[in-house]
Image (cartoon, rainbow, N blue to C red; front, top):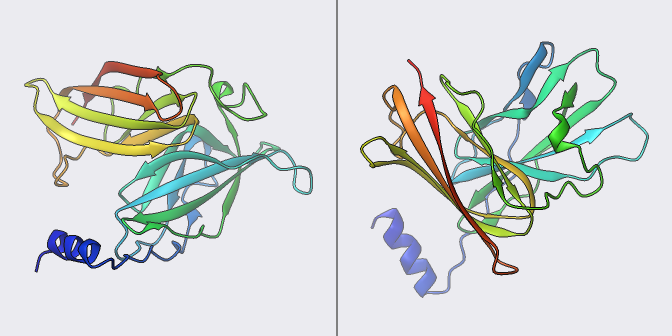
Length: 229
């Protein structure tokens, strides 16, 4: 019996899939570098279909700490935060944890990983709740890129998000369907299609649809990006 049929049988019989265990081994790969995006890595969790990454900034240890924010989701057991950069001379600290997700739910948090660093101004303009005033789709960064790029978007309310990458022939290459809380978010595309194969170099279109689950607000937007080889 295939995996999908097992899930359907379990649903029919009222059998609930257990949520996965918390990820282990989270660490910051490049914590000793300077002015580079923060690279995270952790151990793969069996049965997990994706991972959620959470972040906060600590101004000084022992002082009031910032609130945790969900900044991205990835199917891989690694992630690059293009909205922040490591800097061993900074007096600020960046702290992260990840959770594993499957159809049964979201795991408990991993242990945290911390490094000296800073964030780009637009993330900390409102140091209170970090909630944007309107929907927005940012240019991906870097662009052109190889091997990965971050697609950032702004959600003023909890929303259903659809993000799809198309080639210039209009064929779907990669897609995400997410339920997100309000805030500044990002998805990282690693240059692979839905089956895990490397996409060829060229121009791609990413189409973003966000629909509020709290009101009638909605945004549809598209942008171009270039994958280099």
